[in-house]
Length: 141
Image 1 (cartoon, one colour):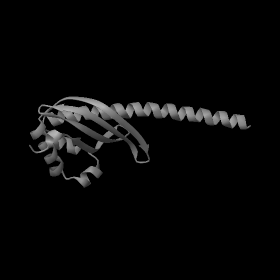
Image 2 (tube, one colour; image 1 turned 180 degrees about the vertical axis):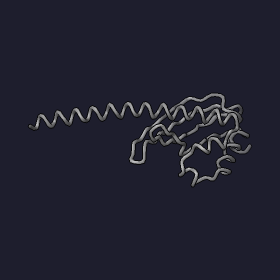
Image 3 (tube, helix red, strand yellow; image 1 turned 90 degrees about the vertical axis):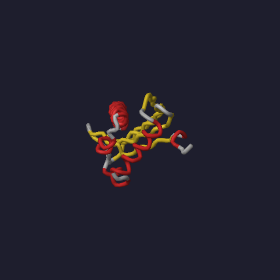
Image 4 (cartoon, rainbow, N blue to C red; image 1 turned 135 degrees about the horizontal axis):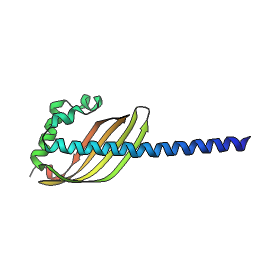
């Protein structure tokens, strides 16, 4: 009887691992597509469109004008994004949905920076829940 339960538990564990691995891959790909859209909108100065695709939590912590103003400042100082490479990622599963953190080394017309994107993935809905850019090229000269 114990052997039977052990086998059932092992099978259940394998099924969960396979399902999680597939979900991780899909959620990661969905978040990466959103980063591409973010960069296209950024280069087109469509900052309001970027803000519209954020979570309510982000909207509570930063108003539209604050968020848009930050992106305008980044673009004024660094210019348009020219190239980006993902250097790190994390996917976390929780009761509130899945979160995906992507870190990019990004080149702009007038500098470089490290961008961190945090997305909440729920079904087919992917919303930006946090954005950070670190660049010495943003500092006053």
